[in-house]
Amino acid sequence: MLEISGLTKRYGQDAPVLTGLDLTVEGNSIIAIVGASGAGKSTMLRCINRLVEPTSGSIRLNGHELVDLKGAELRRARRRIGMVFQGFNLIDRLTVMENVLAGRLGYVNLFQAVTRRYPASDIERAFQLMERVDIAHYANKRADELSGGERQRVGVVRALMQEPEVLLADEPTASLDPRTSEQIMMLLQSLASELSLPVLINIHNVGQAKTYTERIVGLRHGRMIFDGLPDDFTHDALEAVYGGIEASDESIAPAAKRQREVPHEPF
Image (cartoon, rainbow, N blue to C red; front, side):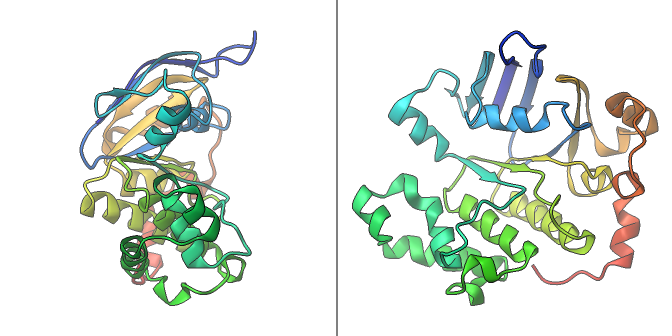
C-alpha cells in the first residue's frame, strides 16, 4: 500500500508546486494522474521515489516512511519503487539484456555491477519478463537499434526487474505513436493485474486514462481536485482539471473508439 499524506513541494520562495496532497493506493490498482502541464504530476511521482525532495508531508510504502530516509536506507527503499520514463532512459550502446539487468544494480555488489556478471537467477528472470512483453528475441541487440515502443518495453522490464512494490510511469506513451501507445497502456494494465502491482501513471491522454485505468486523480496548480472512477470523469471534471484549456481531440476522445480502429497485436 502506498499512502501519501499532506505532500507539499516548494522551490525556494515560489508558490508550491504541490500543496497538501493526500492519496492512498492499494492492491493492484492502476491509477491515472492527469492535469495540464505544470500541474505537478511529474513532481508528485518524483517525490515518491525521492528524485525530488518533498518540502513536507508523509509518503509511506507498505508501512515504511520514505521521506526521512537517507544514504543506504534510501537506496534500499528505491529498489522497491519501479520507474518507467517518457524518454526511456536506456543506455544506447548496451544490449537489451544489459539494460534490463540494470534493474538489478541495487541488489548486486560493485564487482558484479562493473563487470555486469549477474546471478543466473537474474538472467533467467530477465528472459521470462522479456518473453512476456515480446522482446526476448532482441536480447543481444543494442538499445539504439530498437523502435520507440520496443525501447519502452525494455524500460518496463527493467523496472520490473527491481521486484518493485509500486510502479511509477511518467508519461510512458508521450513519445510513442497512437497505435504503440495503446499497446503500452494495455501492457501496463495487464501487468498490474498479473503481478498484483499498484501502478501510478502520469498521462496527458484522458481517453486512454478512462479506458485503461481504474481510477483518475486530477491535479490543478498542485492541488488534487478530482479523485474518482473513470466514468465519473465527465466533461465538467475535465474543465475543472484543465481550467478551460482546450484539450486536443486525441486527449479527450474515447479510447474505445480508437481501439476499434487499431488492431491489437500481441504484447
